[in-house]
Length: 332
Length: 104
Image (cartoon, rainbow over all chains, first blue to last red; front, side, top):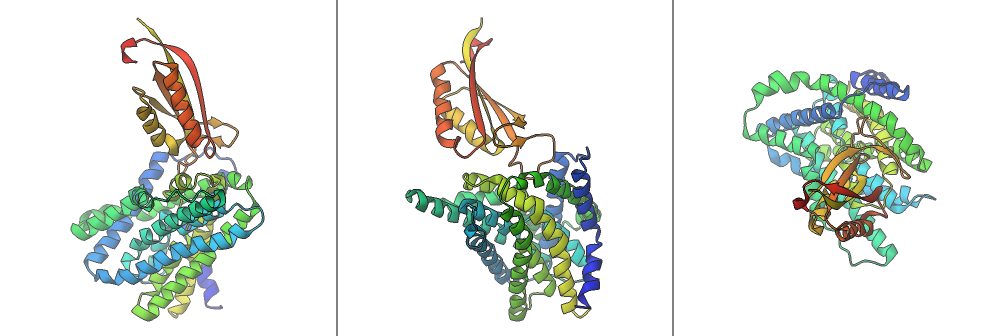
């Protein structure tokens, strides 16, 4: 513990967190500062493209079969997170099961911005990780969304006695793969594997990554402060769940990572990435998919929980926490 | 020459946009216009000004011109049956004069 605390505090002072809190503060103070939607879209494209390229280049130079077990682990974590939500949040008084399952789906799904935030912090802390770990993103994201929509449909079907309507899974998978975040990352991976993008990577994507990430963190902070109003309209359980869940999910991810570490030599840094992917909750692609897939769930509940509290907790607490633990485990 | 036609206006959540325009075309309308919309209603306050990460909270306004009242009613009824329960959505209709009458 005495080793851990200074490392944790050092992580808390990272620019990522500073810009996030800055965004929350200015929006809470009612500032007129606005960053155009198109810039937000471009930045998230840029960051995920860079992450994809890094992963693709790493895969080209290594053995791709290493990813299979961690990918299966990611699928399992995504589904378990939805189950946890169904049987904890969904059992609380005054909480509707579809709302709980949709919240679980969003927390099981992955945030591109949180993923973008953890990687440079691992680099700064000099904790080594397999560069392809970012490619685990869709393996957790899609199963969580599918599981949430299937579970909600089964529940609603049972309740209304209408079990004839089958949930079509393929359209959900297709929609997730076509979402801007996953597309940008997979395109990056493909370009990294199939082409030699090093010149553009070294001169453009890599140097600008941290700056764009800082701007994205301001946007995420402003968004979090604005969505607090949504969250106030729903039961307080959602706020409590949104605070605890990322940390619990993070430990679940880290635990799976450590098991893989013992079994296959998956790195401690890779376990941190898996933990943060598990801790993060989707902010770009997840909400529209869930809104369409579980129409009866209240979007103020799950989007409020995820964007207002879940994402800030994942970035501000989980990233420093797991990097701190990893540094202690590596004997720093 | 102008012709009396019906203008059906649908204000709805942006994520319904594609589904609604598909429904409108399949019902037999010749075309439609989509705008971004913002405002306040019974479910929520929605605005297009602030950056919204997911777009789940944005609105669109869809306008359809139909030659007959029956077609406008048919579209409204289909929307009502499918989306009124779970989504923020409002429809209204009024008579207008179209200046290119051969279009409808």
